[in-house]
Length: 436
Image (cartoon, rainbow, N blue to C red):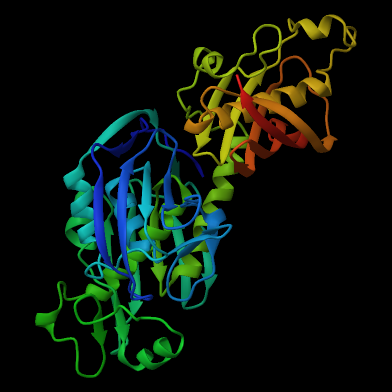
């Protein structure tokens, strides 16, 4: 796998807000979904406005929670479920950044398809942002699952496409293949509604599911139906399986340049594929092959951090994922002032300065949060410090921070420094936020 050699497309967000209201397919409860514009590298983030503190849940694989017959996300006490149809619309339309306020646990089922979401987002309009979208181009086949249930990702010279083989409950195998573009998504995939096999209804009811499902939002497949006149497409169920797959792929946070062949896959297998792709993406990043940048250069960094020469130890920010993760670099040269007095005959970057670089990168991540404007992040504690290798002139120090906990007045992060993919230092850092 490699980063695509095509010119990366700009990230996008909404021009105006969009609102959706409806009953959840499984809970049967009515919820309101309000989709708002968000900044670059924010990602799709759900906000439970009905809960105290309005907790947020990022649409990432790290937030997956086990749910039967649907995709669910959880962060602490906040949970959002049946997100796949809405996320498929974001992924299919290439909407990358949005804050999604929701008044309950489950996304509205609408008419059982992604079309109402797609039409609402298109009506709100989308605008490009000054940061590129990450794109992965497959170079070698990747397989998850086995036997009759599998997902195969193959290199492609023609962009992103999906072929799905669906074992139809009424017998036989339905196959559908399409290139995935915003245009084909709206025309060929988004209108396909969710379906249920008639003989499974009792088991769903006993599990407390399907409380909001009826003939207005769910296609019933059984001995007596559906009739061709009741379908939007002759092969509507297999198209809906592609819709679900796209919704799960959205959790990866990248565009995919590959041909996917799905054989009877469901949400669990879809999640496995996305996680495998994420691992390969992470390996590319750590090896220095990912050159996508967040747009934060040294001038932007100096607007956020109070540090100046010789103690400013972050040269550029490569990537920021919401308030969850940030990656920056420090180019280490023999001209660094600390080499003059720290083992000048055998220059090694002091470990304490690696810690300082990690703290500064964490500060950049924390300062992006709007309520932290006008605050200073003061280092409170350093735990679980380990140094695993020497950093010398000519090295490029890759500084990664991931949020463990972030609440008003306090930030807790896991930080790592790497050189050429090798871990050289790590620590957990806690900050208290004080008035500047």
